[in-house]
Length: 363
Image (tube, rainbow, N blue to C red; front, side, top):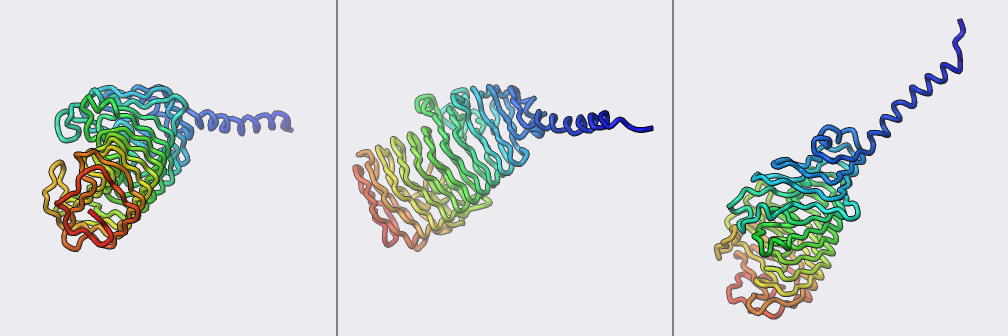
């Protein structure tokens, strides 16, 4: 008996076409609920989150994504209220792209939690965004407002770029926003934060540990400045090879800031601040202190976290009349190899409490 060649060809064509169609259907997925995202994310490499309202006490879970996945926030993403630690959003994976569609907003609904105490007490508040364990990835063009407490936590990341992130927590200025750090970086290598536009009530940038970190082209308003630290008291307490450049800090408590923890161990080395503009700084234009404790510096520096190879180049601008231009409090011999050029901070007071100012710096 002879087979029909046309019939055989037809079955072969169907057999080949069916898997291809299945793959195409799964490649791009639009989700409008967290349940659908949870069950479907592993089969999609192009994920669109369209107007999701995240249930109370739940994380928008984008962890362990398929390598090469793109995630797009579309419409308004919001979060229902519950006292818990969060995070509200978590992303991990390799070669991941997270981006925002035109007109989108990610609203942390922070006013539901704000009570003036931040992470120091009061309501238990969820952290906003865990960018943990991301490798060779990009987060770009996100429009965020009203984070309950800390914003982007970058930890265990390698070769991660955060580009054109806007965080507007200005509503918290009069409504009890506190500890609303924009970017907290720890235990990471090769992190770039570019063109950030931040309005908040705490550090615009806080690098607690890590190496090869860059912050450039940023605007920081309302917070505590561009900070290294606090360094010390964690599992990883070393910061190295940092460039913070071409950025402006205005209407903020501090400008350039390095804070190491009292009686801790670790290191801060090869850090450069260049082309930083200050305007209306209310406490310290430049503050470098080795006596840090949360909310209450001791006034007595310790030497366990030396600050070496520090360069300030082109740090200029004005502080408020009641503020201090520059404050340096170092332990004996623990600050060295500093190079300061074109540093000109004016408008405030000259500190009488500076200690162990290294050669090359002025106070």
